[in-house]
Image 1: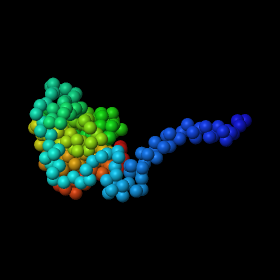
Image 2: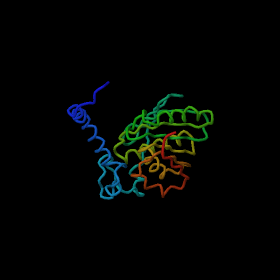
Image 3: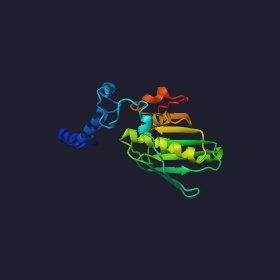
Image 4: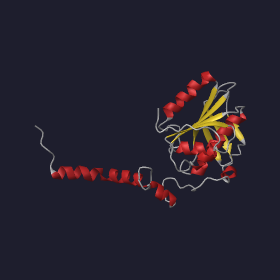
Length: 219
């Protein structure tokens, strides 16, 4: 029969885990889990994403990509866009004579290996049979929200530049808010799918003229 751990052993375990408890508390303090989150945002307190409080029409010019060069081999898996703010990387799922384009973007990691990467890959591969050209966007600076809006717009404009006139934007978490912000300035966008989107930075949702589908979790 196993003996119960002593008080000293229990105290040692707690001491070892304490840094993790503090980390979780810190994450909750400045994120949606905090019941005072909205109040903190109104006061301009938002340590994990230092972004402007309101997205107005001035963002249309300040977030304009001005793509001046595109690097792409025929049928390549990756595309690099050279914008006035640096290189933007896309994972490409090209389709000849595509009727619809889809831009997908992940969360605050900004990279291709976001939690929704499996879903995004399925969208890209399955869309080919339906004449849908998908690009998976990698954010340059995911902790700077204006830059994520810039990157979403650049991806949309890239699809426009290759002849795709209708685009749907899909984003998870941070990518959901960036999708809303970027799509609100691009007339070619016909649909936006923000999945478990963060609320901050998504103020432009009321300005969009397209139908939106809001999802609270991943498939």
